[in-house]
Image (tube, rainbow, N blue to C red; front, side):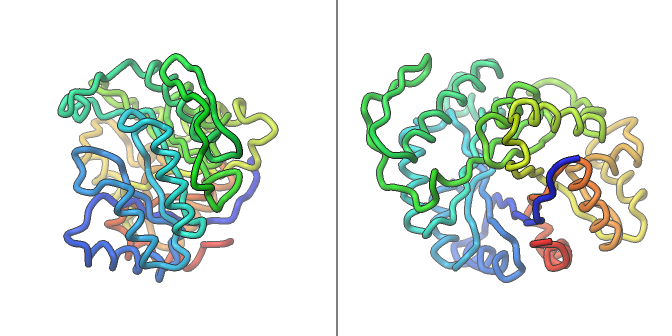
Length: 313
């Protein structure tokens, strides 16, 4: 059993047709009661995070803005810390900083970045997290790591949120979830992303999710109950026949041999009537501690009744 945090709901966005459309999306998310609007960080996506976050914050009053997630390899952590702190100051404390080790081999190749092994990328992320946290605090930061060196840098401006904007780290494997449990404020439980390796559907079910939460718990120790657990919901289908919807989703994804029961176990999709989906979310919170589902923004309207029903409860 995990601590029961109140529900809140994020919206994960990738693109907008225009500036006006992006502004409308941010305002609609706030109007519908979503807690946050989060942007992915990819060279192959239309939007880049910081300008989109800044605009969203400027046209709303309480919507939180953040990333799902910054790719650590795309910018130096000292620069990232400064940009995040600046936006936290300008938005009066509404930033969530999601950061990850990177996973999309193709875009590394497109821009000529070396795509190191998962272990190297995660170790580099661990160093970056130490630098970012240090620069959110008081006093100059000196850090002599294997991948990064910082020599007496003072973190400015001071973020409004102290000891810093909430840190979100997502993962599907043990090493990354261990880092998240040790360092993050928000931990995203995701399916594993292994380039060139077929997906292990079993690790996405109930037993696999329990194992992931156990890794986070082990790493977090006494602070585990303070953590907010999250996951990304890729598909929401409001329907009277949830098994048929789950079967159709498995077929669409090419998951040969995945039964509707297995798909319904996965915490990355929701199928059923509004009552059934609400019950599923309540069960996942009780079983895994997931209180911060993040919905892909194409489902902003379909999921809105559940935001109104469950947010803050």
